[in-house]
Length: 159
Image 1 (cartoon, helix red, strand yellow):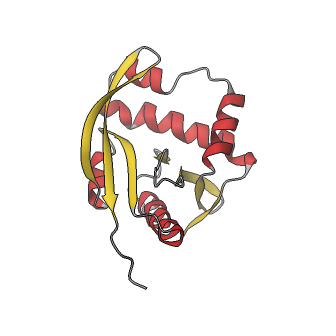
Image 2 (cartoon, rainbow, N blue to C red):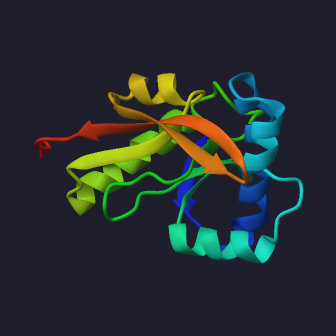
């Protein structure tokens, strides 16, 4: 069973490992070796990562106590990070996290969800009703990466 809970500082390293290994093992299907190495560098100052996670305030997915994914929802409706452990993909982790985001968004009155989505994640977001607003090039540590600004508008919630 997948449980979703709020982030605690002790999660930071597990979330970095998910971020790193998902990019290196999954996103490498759609990006070059140089691009994934820039996006998920071998050496990262973990204090920077800890601050980043504290600022994101992510939701953490677990299966039997194992951290298997995370995402966040910013007040503006931005989903800044969305990562599922590379060994747990296709097991409902992403679906559970996205449904949690929509539930929290409903509680907060979010009308527009949006994210900068990788080539790899685009079909997943489309499955949940997101549309491409624009394609863009991002520069990360000297490498240009293509991604998509995707959004989902929510008119009225049924109560």
